[in-house]
Length: 217
Image (cartoon, rainbow, N blue to C red; front, top):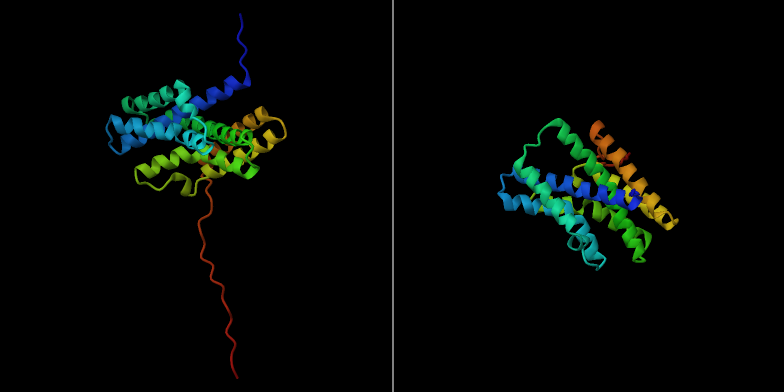
């Protein structure tokens, strides 16, 4: 008896891998700040599940993380890994970066397509895709009184925005699975490349127009 691995199963695997990676990232922040095990669990849950829970609350539907026990379990596993294992190695860091990048696209696409399924307009769908992708990390950083990393000039939010737009447009064209795949691919390539080459958004400039003074006489 053979089991067919369809797109839905692949997307869910990427989704759960992202929950695990972000759970670990939340745990690593707790480790850096010297938190106790409760702090590890709280930051891992916020980091791994916060964006999806926020999305579902805005859509007024029960959070998926509470319906499917796999999500809570995977996020808690991320907290346990960060608590028990020293993950400062280069190879581990690269693995977390890749998993986080792929999940960024998956979450952006999920948020956008769920919003469209609720008959929300395109711009609202894109916004919910962005919230799903970066909301958990923003809440996590605010909880520990740090400036959210999406405001630090990195392309994290920009990548999520591009992924959400791609997923939403393809879903409207009748190709939601292609939209999900495209969003994951775009986010994976762009987010990893941004980290590798140090791409950042420009900082604010201070333009002061000079008005020439007329001489009298």
